[in-house]
Length: 76
Image 1: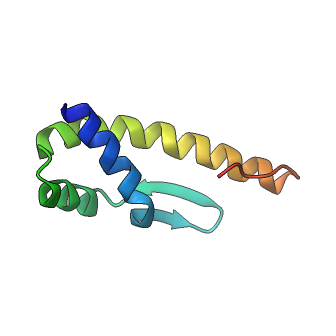
Image 2 (image 1 turned 90 degrees about the vertical axis):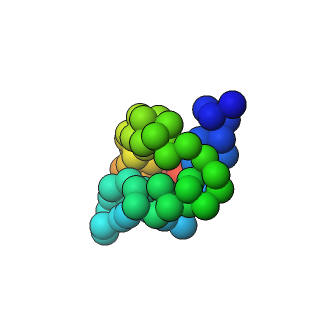
């Protein structure tokens, strides 16, 4: 059950992104943990799972942004 709760949390973190010009750095983990706590999600589970999901998300979105600079499009 906790895995699904973390996945739901991921969908809510769109406004909690840390970015610099030209690159996505990741989520604001303080805000993510606060949101998890407010939603009643076990923060230990969030702290274990979210960094793994974040790493994949950052890599894929940065690849898409790089492709859009080379003439491709971002598929958001």
